[in-house]
Amino acid sequence: MIDASGTWGSPSPVGADGLPAIGERAAADKISYRVPDLTDADNVVRYAGRQVAVLGSGHSALTALVAFAGFAQTHPGTRVRWVLRRGAVGNAFGGGESDQLAARGALGQRAQVAVDAGHVEVVTGFRTSDIERAGDRLVLVSDDGRRLDAVDEVVAVTGFRPDLSWLSEVRLDLDARLQAPVALAPLIDPNVHSCGTVYPHGVKELTHSEAGVFLVGMKSYGRAPTFLALTGYEQVRSVVAAIAGDHQAAERVDLILPETGVCGGAGLFDEPVSDAGAGGCCGVPAPVELTLTASPRD
Image 1 (spheres, one colour):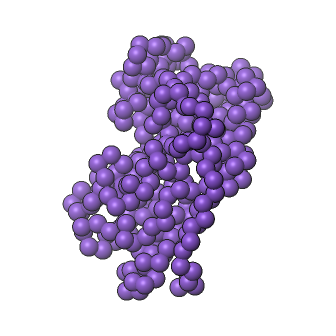
Image 2 (tube, rainbow, N blue to C red; image 1 turned 90 degrees about the vertical axis):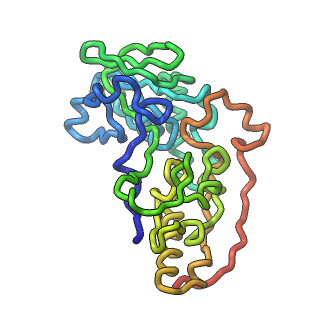
Image 3 (cartoon, one colour; image 1 turned 180 degrees about the vertical axis):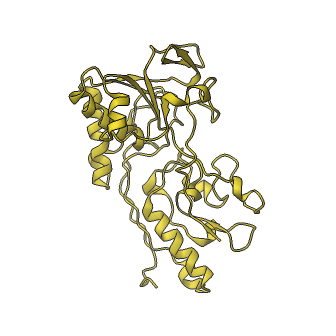
């Protein structure tokens, strides 16, 4: 069995510790866990002229910021507040020109322009513990007691997690923290790896105690935010080769990923980020070329 069902249906909550904030479920009508399509007529009515809080620091959050910044220019009165758990914006804008995926780097640059131009208010070091109703608006309260001014809508793009409920009778070997296969988890830990520094992997790292069961694609990454589609394609090729009995092809990993220019996950760094120029994990790494056995694809 190959489970490639992804994580789209299981968004992470607003609450900072993996659990819904107090009052979050009661405020569900005012919270979107997706990047809204601001060309949709219903969403135009919902967000135009409103105050919106965007929570998250990943690429989905940057996409939302860019979209709302443009939306605000054609819909006066729309105001955007970017709420981050981390203590500083730091490297949230990504690698910019150092990103080997040009579109991803450009997204971060556009988001930074929107922030620098004053189109987006930034709140850092805010770990939401409560969501309170204030009439038809919402007030976010942090675990240190800070209260933000009321907003009309919340867009929570704080990541996703796999839905494992229907696999409860299957013997899965999952890392307790990342909910990824135990052999894969150390390779994708967002505290250490960016999308481009994850070691190439295949059927060996995706095998579970239950014979013939494989989680692939975004679901294999559990709660880690560093997945790229190229990784999923290679996972599937390797797993299918193993199922077909071609173990030589299954063990071969043909994959070179583009570097992000930064590393680190969404919301995992709560303290101010040190100077990137000082090196270390979150600086701009030198390009690394992976030397792999080159063989034709089957």
